[in-house]
Image (cartoon, rainbow, N blue to C red; front, top):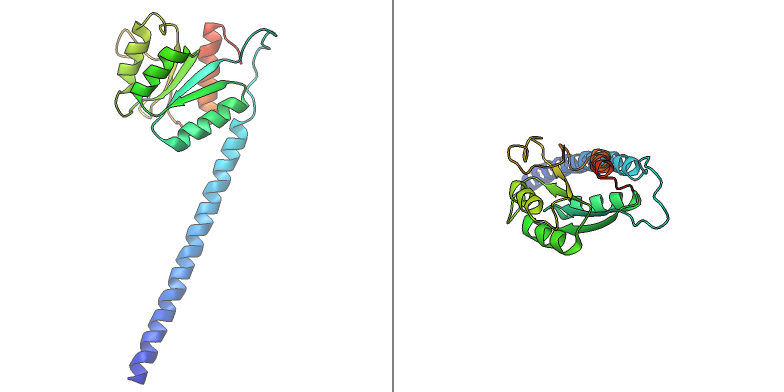
Length: 181
């Protein structure tokens, strides 16, 4: 029995060592991913060159519609650091309500959302007189959603986590409208 207990203890000790090694490997992967995210966020927080707003103008109001609270929070942080006023919504229906209430200069929306997809949101925003001139940037990995009808997005970004692309697309659509940040 003693020999069996010793063998079991050796097995458990080697298993414990393997689990500790696996944990250290996972920690290292997480640390590296976090550092990459910090670098991307630091780059995204740097303001894009823009024309100087006149003294009486307000910062552009941007509505971010995304079901992922992390993407919403990081987008809001990045855009606020770039000089935009930002409001958020967690789904298409909430986004439509916020757009009708706040009349944003631009909407950045996830292509596939709960309660209302991006195509429906774009159609409803563009068909209403009070929101028809709102510029719309869609975050779509496919890149072509919303361009197949009379009502389409003004710009499409493939990677919602690439805040530089999102901000560049936003600056582009606002420049076409004559709004600067």
